[in-house]
Image (cartoon, rainbow, N blue to C red; front, side, top):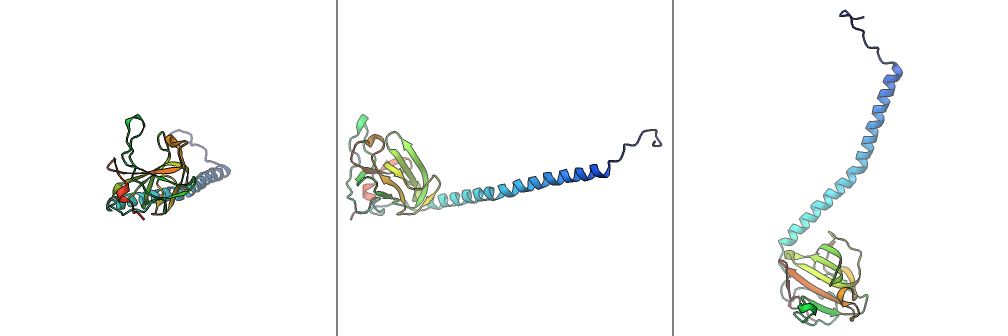
Length: 196
């Protein structure tokens, strides 16, 4: 008994103290293992995010495309200015169509960041690349996509997809619809493309 008349709690046995230390050590090791496994992926994600933002900022500081500055997305295929041609439901054509054999590789006309790889009603399978000056380069009616995903960096000339007739072009001769959007508005890509 203590001087104040209270009982002193019993001291833990040696075995229970060792067991308590072992449990704490296992929990700590488990925590360190999980942290070690997560840290590289968190670090990679952070690095990827920072690189993507740096690339976006540098693209926005570059000049918009100018007359005859962009290569043909289908090298050696004939370019025709189909901008503004009448389309169904009172629409007008906001791009140009470049015809080629189904499966012909489509090359990016610019360096940039892939902002979309997916489908929409009119364009079918589409790819959008944001290039210098923030211009959006829109490729539609693809048969298939190249091995790219949103936020990927592409260089001018990289393959982004393959000619087809998806979307509202189903049943027409295979082609790529190529459009350019500056500040959200479509502009005629024909004058900006180099003619052979």
